[in-house]
Length: 375
Image (cartoon, rainbow, N blue to C red; front, top):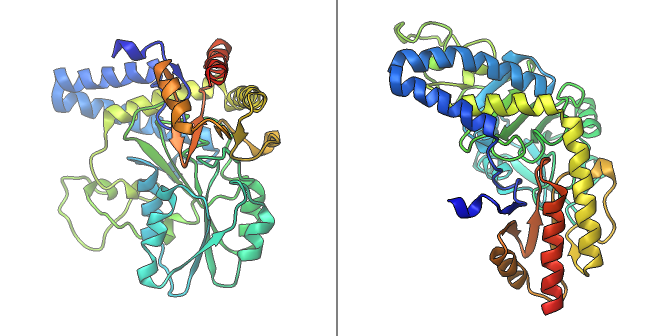
C-alpha cells in the first residue's frame, strides 16, 4: 500500500483518490456502528441523509426533495429508464460514443418496442445541430454524458436542454465525469434527470452516487423496486395497498442506505463547494492545456485532434497516443515510473485532480520525454 502513496495520480476520471475529509467522515460513522450498533447508525443516518440532500441540492441548483441517494451512476440511469411509462415506438437519442453505463439501460428497452437512435460524433465531438437533426415526433428522450469519458468533450447542456424543452422531450444527463468538476445548474439547463457516482471528480467513496429528478418528472416515474424505505408511513406499519410513496425522489430509496458511504459523499461535496466548482473548473482547464501543449510538442496525437478544444467545450480529460511508439510501450514505461493513468480504446487517458501540483504534471512530461529519447 505504501508504494502507491507518492504516485503521480492522473486517473481521477477512473477512480479518484479519496479526500481525507471523506475518509475521516466514513471512519467516524463506522465507529458509531462499531461501538453503538443500531442506536449509533440510526443517529448518524438521521444527521447525514438530510445533510447530503442539501449538499447535492447546492451542487446542482435544485431542491433537496428532488434528490435520491443511489449506489452508482448506472443505478440512477435504471431508475429513470425503467420508471418511465414508455409507449411502443418511442425513440431515445444517444451519442454514438457514450460510455456503456449510459447505453445498456436504454438498450434494455428495445424488447419493449423502444427505438435507440445514435447521434453521430467526430473525434468525440458533436453539436446541438447534430442532435436537432435526429429529433422526430417519436423522440421521447435525449440521454448523454455531460463530459465524454475518452474525449473530455463537454456537451452544451444549457442549449441542449432548451432544445429538448422546446420539443417537449425529456433530457437525461450522465454527470459521472462532470459533477465536482464543472459548475452545474440543472434548472438553467432544463434537465429532467441527472445521475452520477461519487468516486471520480467528487473525490468520494466507491459504491455511492445520487440522482436528481425534477419535480415534473418524479410523478411520471413508477418505482421499479419498492420497500418500506420508499413509503411515507413508518417502516413498522403494516404493508398495504395502495402504496403511499414519499412525495419526492426519496421514493426511489426503497431500503436501508449505506450510511458510511453517505458520510463520505457528504463530506466530499461539502469540501468541493467550499473550494468552488468555478475554481476547480479553471484549474482543470489550465492543467489540460499544459498537458495538451506538452504532448503535442512531443509528437503525440490527441483523440480530439491536434487543435485544443475551446474552454467551453472541454473538461479535465485528455487522451493521447504516439504515431510511432506503441501505446503499450508508453504505458509500461509510465507503470515503471509510478504514474497512474487509464487505458481506453488504444489511447492513454490522463485526468489530474484539481489539487494535483504542477510539479507532478511536469514530472509526467519529463518521464514521457525521457521515453521518447530512449525510443
